Length: 285
Image (tube, rainbow, N blue to C red; front, side):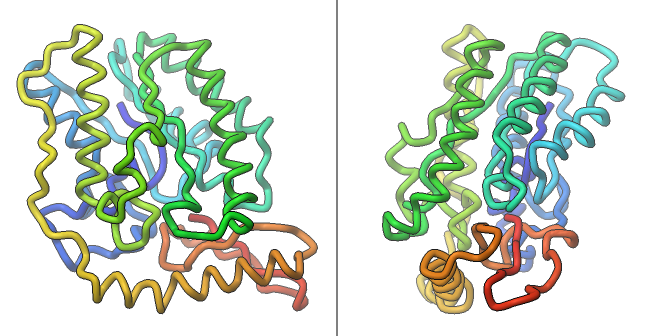
């Protein structure tokens, strides 16, 4: 069983290498043009076991959405023991003006408790420095990293309390390589999804779960070309960095981090227009 946001939906890893899949992944649901690490892991487990795989992740999901929407749906269908459940979410929360670490802690504990009560082994991660992936200067990376670390602390406590498998993404050097990521640098590309699936499979094997066929690391399709990468930077990356720089020099009345509008945006993500030059439009990744 998988719960979470666009990474678990599979955004960044198009099925069949399709070049027509909406790169933003806005509003995407599992199986709708995307494959992703969770599906790769389920296929690998199916090489040795009879697997029923349900993916409840949604693009743009925050921790409260997982707790109040995805979890009830999952519990309504899970009429028996759950063996493995992934819970990877929280980055979208760090990009909202309503960020509340205490609320995140409360919701994640409630989700983890219900999943483990059904017997689930939890799969979670400790997030890396996303600003470093974007190549931002340290003074721009600092506000985002501070929030990500608060989410990481919650997952640290969650792991200490409920156990399971937790991957520390910063332990993998390839996380800071360009070819790990899709064109938007926020979602893993095919290589990143394959690495995530393989890492969880390896940890499951260490814990005694036999897996005949581990997820392949070789990619079937080419990553975005340098030209496509450069065009994305010009159209989305540079304007976004400029907006962040302005908000740092002239802080808005409600400080928020903004992301390129092509990233993982559900319809409700764009909030009211600025009422003054001191305010910015808040976008959710």
